[in-house]
Every structure is written in structure tokens, then in C-alpha cells.
Length: 414
Image (cartoon, rainbow, N blue to C red; front, side):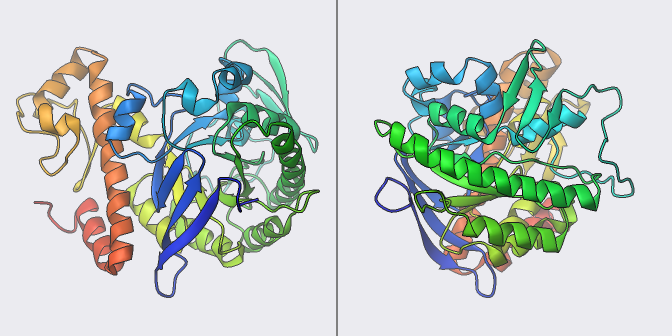
């Protein structure tokens, strides 16, 4: 289904002896040069920033959340508007996730974090302290209550596909079950099988809806690899998802790598998956944006990845620069009339000072969130652009070591 339908992927330069590579994803709404960071616009908006501004920052694609858009305004509204890109006035490619993350977060009440360090506890009925379980999983799907008003809803693989087809993103993900690191090995095994079974149902429904909605541009479908930190489960899931075919014979257009994992193991786990996944399909790492994570994931074979962190951190006064991360709302910046980062080419750094942005946070002005989000998104996009150039230019290892040396404080930034 990747041939002649408006979606394709081609590989450019490869990292010698590793799965990392550059490439190009082609969609009905444009191309994405990979590796690429995909900023998250959860509710069809990157919080505090105009879609036009995201284009000026160099974003090649945006990702929205199927669960949130299902609840508000409803996928029928987005469909009637002409799809996600038209609805939010974004001219480029779009992604939607399946809602699988919300199944986990509603079920156990954890914050939206990639890695949890709770490795000494094993429980399949875990729930965060002071939280209420809002979702329950069975082999057919998930029943949950809305976090907005408590109304009851049901997601199945078929429902998720129907919602995402109405949302109209260029790339969407099969419905999966995301576990936590606290789940037992036995539950992880059952969850991997459940995600596999759901992936089969997703691709069958995807084929049916693609035919029924032939008046809309083709939407690519990515399966999602789970398996937590177990090598055999990750490899098994990757191999078997790569072998799945729909009733009409189509395979998945690409693959997402998600699930519970610890930060230090990220590159290793991505590598296990890429050992087994079809090499000619793009691979998306779900939920990362810190420099060390991006370098590890790209080197191990990830082509694209998304995360809310640049905007979320920025809205809380956190700033990314080459030398690390700092909080701009602290006292030392009250009389600092320099840009956030003199080496940055973003709108914020060209026009505003640290002292002014510090003032905005102290005055609780909304502009603070906008200016910091602009900078953090640009920092992240620009870093990945430079990583891509380093692979094409043959100096990835040197660029990684120099960049991470500054980020971790081993090399003093200019």
C-alpha cells in the first residue's frame, strides 16, 4: 500500500554498521526529510503557538491526539472541515496517535513520561497514588470514562481506525496497549499478543475504510511495537508485526516503537526492534525529545519521533540551550538583557531578552509560554536537522560527541 497511493519512503545515507540512516517520507501533504522531530499539537494545536509559526520554525509535520480530538470537537467535525491539516490551517503532513497512551494513563494515573524508574515493583493492578482508574482493558478493546465529564466510551481497533480515518492524518497508528514497567512479565506477554491481535484488526479495517473513503487522500498506517524491556518480546513483536497482512494483502506502511522502557536502555531497545523490522519501512519512536535520547534513537534506527516536552517545558519556564536546560523564571535572569541563546536563529532569540521573558513569567503573562515554546521547538527541530546533516556529511559520531559534551557539561559552550 506504499506504492502509487501518495505514500512512500526512500533511504538516503546509512550510518556504517548501525541502523541509523537519512531518508524521505512522501505523503499526500508533502515530504518529511528524516531523521525528523515531529512536534505535538495534541488538540490540533501546538499550545501557545500559531500553526504558521511552527512552519517558520522548520517543523515538517505535526502530530495530534486521536483520543482528545474524539472527545472534543469530535472526528466528524474534523472530517467535515476537510481533515486535520485543513482544520488547523497546517499545510504539511500530519500524524495522529491511536489513543493507546491514554488507555495507560487513564488506567493507572501516571503523568505523561517516557521512562519510569520503578523497577523493583511488579503489579498488574498498579495505580498512581491518589488517582482513580478511568480505563479498563479487555481482549476486544478498552472501556473508559472521559477525563472531561466522566462520560463512558469504548475504543476498539475498529473504532480507533474509524476515528483516525475521519481525522484524516497522513500517518496514523494502530491501536495498541501500552503497559508500565511495573507490569509483570506474564502481563507483558499477554499485552504483546493483544497488541498483535489488535494490529491485525486495525489493518483489516484500514483496508475497508481506505476503499470506502477513496475520495480522501491515502492515509498510511503504522503498527506499534510493544514488549517493555524484554529483548525476546520486542524481537518477537517486531518480527510478527512485520509479517501481518490485511485481507487484501497489504502490510503496514511503517512501524512505531513505543512502550515502557528506561532511559538508559532506549537505544538498545530501538536496536532490537530495528534488527527485526522491515528495513524499507519508516520507523517512528514515540515520545522522545531530549538530546541524548534523540542521538541514541537515531543511531539505533529511528527515522521520526515526537514529544510534548519542548512546549510543555517551555510553558513552565524551562529553556533548552546547547549547554543544557535552565529555568528562566529564576532571580538571576531579572536583569539579564541578553537573548536566551545568542547562537539560536528563532524569533524569540532575535527579538527578546531573558529579562523580558523572566518578567512575563513573574507577571503571569501568556506571551511567556509563546516565546519559550517557539525557542524550545526551534532548538529541538534545529538539532535534529543538524543530526541529519551530520549523517549525510559523514561526521555523525564527532557531532554527537561534541553536542553531548556541551549538553552534559563536559565541554564549555561558547
